[in-house]
Structures are given as C-alpha cells and as structure tokens.
Length: 456
Ligand SMILES: Cc1cc2nc3c(=O)[nH]c(=O)nc-3n(C[C@H](O)[C@H](O)[C@H](O)COP(=O)(O)OP(=O)(O)OC[C@H]3O[C@@H](n4cnc5c(N)ncnc54)[C@H](O)[C@@H]3O)c2cc1C
Image 1 (cartoon, rainbow, N blue to C red):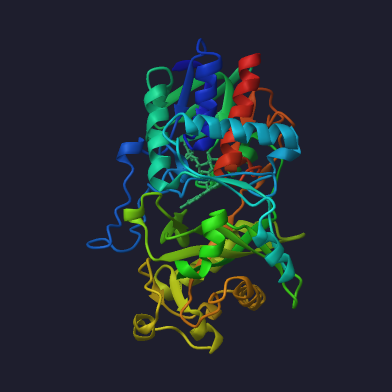
Image 2 (cartoon, rainbow, N blue to C red):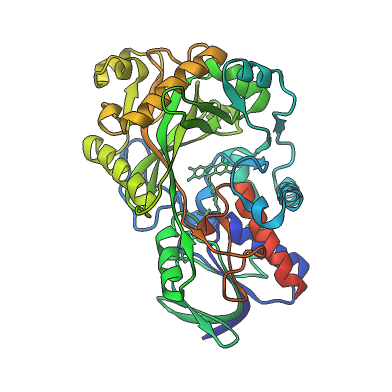
C-alpha cells in the first residue's frame, strides 16, 4: 500500500496540468498519477496504412490513452474562449476561466510551443461575410501547436515532471473508495491512498466514471450527444477562412427544423483519421504544423447537437448505436461524395477515384443516408449549401463526407464551484467531468484544482 498527498487518475491534459501545477506551487507534496495507457514514447497506433490499414481494436487505444490523453496526437488547437470547448466558466467565472486558459498557453509556450501562431476571430472581415449569409462566427483566440509541436510540449513537460511526480503507466484504476480522511484507489497490482484525489479520465474513461458515480452515489446528468460527418475538400476552397483564422467555429440554424449545425475541429492541409471509442470506430481529423507532413485537403466536422428529455437518459448510447450502424455497413467509417448523397446513391471506388478530392483516410464508400437520421442529414446538407456561399466549392459533387463523427459528452458529474464532488477532497475535472470538452478547458480545470489544493 502506498500513500500520497494527491492521487491523479488519468494523464490527459487535465491530469498533466494538475500534476505540473502542484509540482511548481507545492513541491513538498507527494503526487502520483495513475494512467491506464502507455508512456508517451510507447504510444503507437498499429495502423500504418500498409500492413494494417484499419483499426484492430487494441485493448487500450493508443490514440485515446496514455501520457497526453486523447490530445496527444491531436491537432493541438488550444482555443482560448468561453464560447465553446466547455462550460468551465459556469463554475469558476468567465474572467478566471480565460486567465487559466491563458496561463496554460504560457506553459505551452515555454515547453516547445514557442513561435506557433495565435489566431483571432475578433473583428475579422470574415465575420461580416458570415452574418450576411446566415452564419455565425464564434469569437476565439486559437493557438495552433500542430500534432508535432503538441507532442514536443508533452515530451518536455514529462521530462520536467518525471523525477518529482510518481507516474504509474498501464495502471487503470478500477475503484475509488472513501476513507475517513481521504481516498483509496484500487488497481490490478494493488492499492494506494491519498488525502486528495483528482479524477481526470476523459472520454475514454467515461463508462468507468459512470460506475464510480453509481458506487459512490455522486449525482450525474447526461442528455447530449453531437452527431454528424467529417467534410474533406481541397484546402484552397477554405483558404480564406483557414489562412486568417486557422479554425472558424461557425454555427448555422437550419431553416427546416431550426436545429443548430456547427463546424468543429477544422484541420487545414490535414488528414482524416479513425477514432476508436470503446470499440466503436468513428471519424476525426488532425493536421501537422510541419509543411512536409501536410496534405492538399482541409477537413472539418459538421455536427448537430441532439438533446434528449425524459425518459431517455443515455444520450451516448444513442450516438454509439448510430456509429455502430456505419461500422456494420462499412466495417468502420463510411465515405460518400456529396454529389452521390444528393443524387440518392451510394459512392463506390470508381466514382471516388474519378473525383477531384483524394481521400486522406481509407474508408468504405457507401451511403450515409442509411446511417444518419434524416433530420440530421437534412441539417448537414443545408449547412453545406450555406457554407458554399462564403467558401464557394464547399457544395461541389466531389466534396467528401465521412461518417459518422460523434462527439460524446460525458455525463455531467455534479461538482461545486471548486470542481469538487459531494465528497470533500474528491475532484472531477476535464472531459470526464462533463464540464470540459477541449484541450484548453481540460488543462485549465487541472490548474484550477491544483491551485486550490496547493493553498490548503
Ligand atoms: C483525434 C483527436 C483530436 C482532437 N483535437 C483537439 C484539438 O485540436 N483541440 C481541442 O481542444 N481538443 C481536441 N480533442 C479533444 C481533446 O483531446 C480532449 O478534450 C482532451 O484531451 C481532454 O483532456 P482530459 O485530460 O480531460 O481527458 P483525456 O485526454 O481523454 O485523458 C484521460 C486519460 O485518462 C486515462 N484513463 C481513463 N480511465 C482511466 C482509469 N480508470 N484509470 C487510469 N487512467 C484512466 C486515459 O487513458 C487517458 O489517457 C481531440 C481529440 C481527439 C481524439
């Protein structure tokens, strides 16, 4: 049995920045981090595009788990905004939330992120163009580290922490128990105790988080999932947006159903990738800062938020069921030309190969109308035409749609303004709390909790 002052469960951005801040502000505290996945250098997705072309469903997904969490091979876009990426500001206040995100940015800038560009949407000409065409551009400052620099930042942070923080890799925590004065965490090789426990298990730990809440009777709520497609088109089509803003977060309200459709995770000159969440293959995207690794395409998601009301409670299961349909029909992700979707026919390899857009992900040509509910698909089609007005070419026949992209929202764990559960000293942060859904918000939530513990 080991004893620590603080135990952090999960080494994603939430856990890493907590550990880092504790090391800096209260070095006398003993801090342990338990992580289900591998150290950074051992994280390797077996898909190499040659011998292994599609997901082989590893027990722990190297894209989602390990030092760096789900963000390790991400595009490293740190959005400094309260407009999206989470609702941390509802707990800590808008000003504090922004300050925390700026602080995270300053850490990144001293750990390898130096020289990367900070984009801003404020007062841009493009904002006016969006409004004129029924689209809303959300305000944000975006630091784009790129997958490569994001990796360097993580590597440097680990090097700085490894002699001060006790890291336990490949050690998933299976249970958390309340003690009279503190907490016990249990894993396959034993158990450990601590005074303060920070749970930061992200999306991949969402199911486990649910069991912790059930066991400890921590109240939760869950009613949202975002579903849609990833769009891939020639980078030139979106270059007015991406050259100036890097990522435009654009929202459209559909005429037919008055649903909100939004762009999400824009990757100029990027690649479309598979994502494995609890064994279900969905689609995502990323891009590199290094020009030699860039492609001729830009990709982004178009997502529709689906909120459910009583009696249905498990919004994620709804999202999973839709994703399973695409996995069932396509053996994984399905790709379809926009022109084929509009003509009501499936895409096939011949039509894809004749198209102008060369897919960056090997996916199965198919028919997304057999997978996505009509209401969602109608909204996505409407938005593609709306985007075509500000970025002509978006609605071209050869524009590729990959499905499905699902943004699972963890159930929201009931926490107070300190991100502390009903149990004093037990904090839930990052995406696993349902409060954040982004690198910057998750990291900021980690700093916030660490600062509180350091002051006690
Ligand atoms: C491909 C991809 C691209 C993305 N791109 C961006 C982007 O550009 N910008 C952006 O803002 N966001 C992006 N995101 C989202 C972003 O990565 C997450 O919002 C962020 O990583 C959340 O941080 P976290 O620490 O809360 O959780 P995570 O990063 O998910 O980390 C949680 C960690 O906890 C571990 N864990 C889970 N259960 C247990 C357990 N029981 N015991 C021990 N450890 C456990 C997991 O292995 C994981 O390493 C992307 C995500 C993906 C998958």
